[in-house]
Image 1 (tube, rainbow, N blue to C red):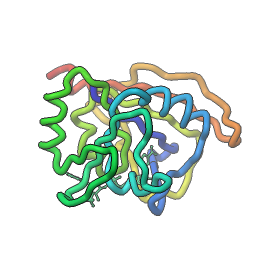
Image 2: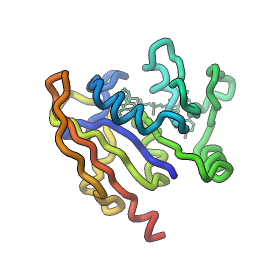
Image 3: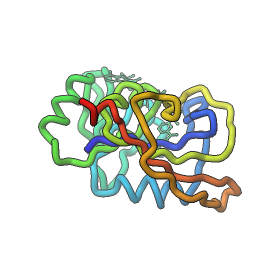
Image 4: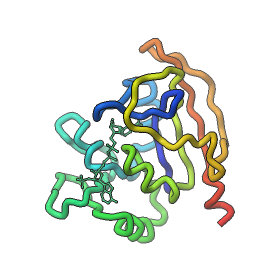
Length: 170
Ligand SMILES: NC(=O)c1ccc[n+]([C@@H]2O[C@H](COP(=O)([O-])OP(=O)(O)OC[C@H]3O[C@@H](n4cnc5c(N)ncnc54)[C@H](OP(=O)(O)O)[C@@H]3O)[C@@H](O)[C@H]2O)c1
């Protein structure tokens, strides 16, 4: 199963100047880590650059997308094109794979995803990168809406699950 996992603000903003909009520990541990641990994550090279020390995520198989054929990231598998990723998917059809960003990689791979796990933060921040607004997309419908959760940061968020109905309908 291929899923996107993302944290958005009310305008579906996901980042600003190469950084995340929010740092919500309850989301990072209770949602992001809980979903992805033990599975495979696919991320863009620029998102990798935002991780401390450009280190991959531990406890997960990391696929890093870059067009740079020479780039080597210790512990990661490199993917150089959409078709290379499609080949990976075919060869690993029983893996749970999470698309974890950023904007370029979400927009490239979202049409292939079966589900999207969206942490919706009840706030508006200045953003320069966005996720597709699934609420107005004819390809996606809401499957589950979680309760509002207060964070120690003072922010409030909830987790929504969306299903790609264009894939179900073939
Ligand atoms: N809110 C969230 O949940 C969330 C999650 C993740 C990231 N973010 C935010 O998103 C922003 C980063 O997003 P971004 O769009 O700038 O970068 P990105 O998607 O993380 O990475 C872009 C890079 O991916 C590679 N790439 C893109 N298309 C490719 C293709 N078809 N084949 C092979 N490689 C390809 C290229 O790497 P090369 O240049 O090396 O060729 C490109 O520069 C940051 O602000 C980050 O904080 C937010």
